[in-house]
Image 1 (tube, rainbow, N blue to C red):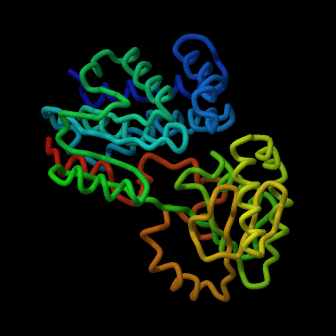
Image 2 (image 1 turned 45 degrees about the vertical axis):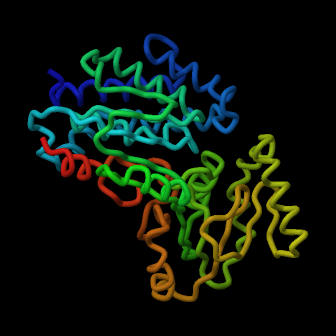
Length: 345
């Protein structure tokens, strides 16, 4: 019987293998991940070795035995025996392993996953599945991953853009569902940041080319702050211009701004623009100035349902945006609570 203890033991073993694979250890099960770090870019050019290595390492560390035990301790219902429900999970493919948390959430609650993989992130998620089945064969029958339409599910977790989420809400209207919408992340600077903190902010902005919902896409700066000085702390990301797809976006957006006579700062690898939008195009970082923390708080309040996370003093530490814990839920919706409430044990 696949007990909660067996699930934790197997998933923590998976995490250890993933961490070793990210470190480049190419023996045993970790070899699969070590190999994919270097080869998956052939099927998705956005999944560079650096980005895949980061994603695999972070996912592996997330599911340590200690973290898993802490996570499930808040949900005593998981301990009860029950018949597993089949949960359809529609995964995005914008960054490597973006559907990993939903995958783990379904299995840790004793349910079975019918996963609709994105073709952009098919190989990594299948590697996770095959490795877990190797560790614990009792998960056989609990995992069904496909790039085709999913069937036979009793509830749904789906993530997509604002447009696709509306389609999901209609299509899955007859099922218990958790539908996530598009969100962006922001950073609030107060002028007291150290050089080290500003360098770490670069990780929050540039990891995965800024394609994730936890990537900082908008800065809020105290009035009078010189935004052009920030690029001095991010010089290591100048290498992004050597990536063909990123360079195409950079050049295109620069040309559009010039034609539109829009004011911007060209750092050589990202375009910085004073713009209210939380969702700039790729290779563009928006910013706005604020006069006081109180007024900024009032200004941001109506935008809360569009913000994934906030980096800055008094908020998430700089450099931590792409390293969420198991209990840091996307869109602030508790995935485990959704599963245990709708599919009682």
